[in-house]
Image (spheres, rainbow, N blue to C red):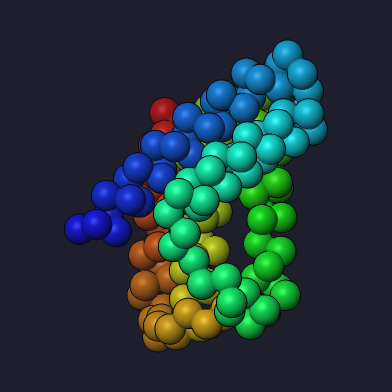
Length: 142
């Protein structure tokens, strides 16, 4: 249940972040917005970290380099999302973002990439997922 609540809260925040960032970029531009978003997020996360100290700093060196650059995706997400919202509006941008997110998560789990448990996939599941995603996008456009 905890995971579902955090997923719902994260989805709400992704949508709000995209809209807020698109509005900020109206005033200061896309890359300035992306930089500001990450500076503010860094300050907030460091403040919380300094109060909680929940990490294992001594094992930091054991993290593979590939995972250390994960924040790069955040830069791409922020800039891509605010650009998409400007171009096609918040609802369509988030709908397409969700389709891409679900498809990518499905592929990662089906292949067992990045340390995820490999989940066997049937043709029926692939057809069902693609049908559901396509139907969602079509219904959304009506």
